[in-house]
Image (cartoon, rainbow, N blue to C red):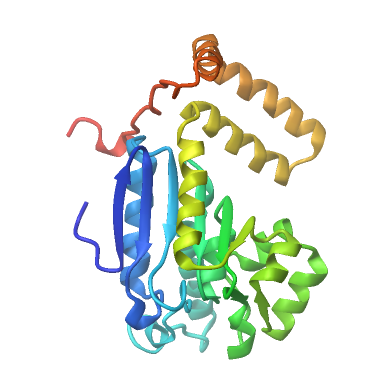
Length: 281
């Protein structure tokens, strides 16, 4: 992987840890941020080395969201013609695809959030599997405050995570949602007093996930997301096909034996992926 400027990435004990590392800019999201995030997620998805991804940040705020100056400089949204407005659709589709990679990654994704999680950052963390926060954290659908509609996943994913009336209130008013309320609504799994405690708690969950058979975790994520978006009957049928595809007597016996012997289980990694486009090189 090329050198990262907006993030640091480490993989230890099958845990990938991606850290937003531009606190002086409140970890805002500009084109390089987007390119690097897409690159990292693509690599992690393909390699199979990591079993869980933890995303944390630095500085006072997790992220202040989109770097708005980008849209008056490198990227221009043309509303003067039908062709220009059609191009906005394709631009947003491309941006949405990067955060969707968090949702479709072959491993669970945990977000550890301190301070402000604003605008595009809400789009980002709503695509993660688990969210932990510090007591001073807050969430804000900032887009309405600058005269636009949130457009990279917040309005599509938050209603799956929180009561619709709460999402509407936040989306219509641009109010801040404090961590304590976010916990009550189920948006975050746990609240910690300090960033240090937050990271320790998130890493503990990551370790527990990494200790499980990767293919069973993969199947569980597939089943949960399918059930979220489909009816019970369809989801049960999908579950039957899925279980039949990945069932392993060896994995089950190893997990049970390891539990009885009070040791860590030994499980194979997910198979590395290689794009058909790269074959023969």
